[in-house]
Length: 163
Image (cartoon, rainbow, N blue to C red):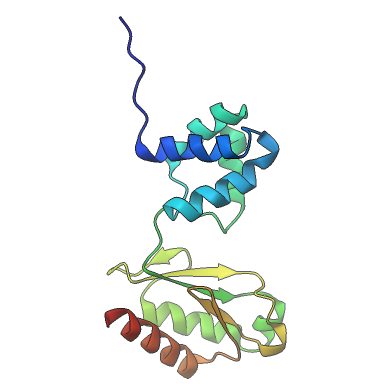
């Protein structure tokens, strides 16, 4: 007698999210956002589950997950730092800010610090061009950020977390 293989908790959540969206393939991006909100990332193991549930190929689901930088394939650190790399921020010393952030955190874009405290991400517009260069820390937007301001913001963020 064959038994139905059990799904991982992440796969069960993926099926539930798909169900809430009517198992509709045109809801794929919303499904991925909701799943990432629940799990903190989109595990590789749920891609076949989503594909089967909404009747898409694995390649189609994988393609969407890997195309959009907003979808994480691994859990993020306790804090997420997003630095804008769009034209306005680039023209206002954004590259210097990026270099300082990577050196300070000892992590590149798309990486998490060794202690799991901070994930550094590149984004391509935070909608704060008038205050370039801009960064976002845990959803809070900061403008006119230079190396000194970056260090202050990170010090405040990490010290608040330690309390």
